[in-house]
Image (cartoon, rainbow, N blue to C red):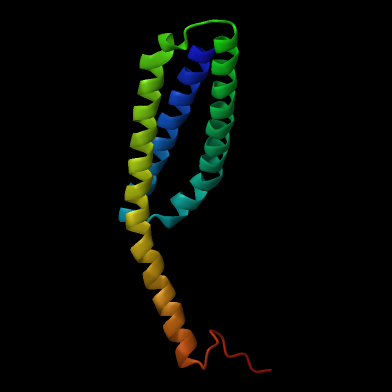
Length: 125
């Protein structure tokens, strides 16, 4: 069971890595609509990975209670850890790209609001 869960987690993590890489490329190419199209899929992947993490912990504990030496999964779990670190690094790279853009838009909105007396839109009816 542990082996199957780890294999499925690795597949999900690699899929998520692919989406993050696509996000980075789409930001570079100003394809912002593409980013939005993947958000729901990425959220589902995050939810699935979180669920599998819980299942993995439960499966390891169950096997330990049965007296199984869980060290037999060490290489596979180490590989999962490597893939998760890669995902973390990709997310960090994406954040480093997105953060300056987000700040730029915030600065623009703040400047517009400041020029309009603290409101973005001056609605007169």
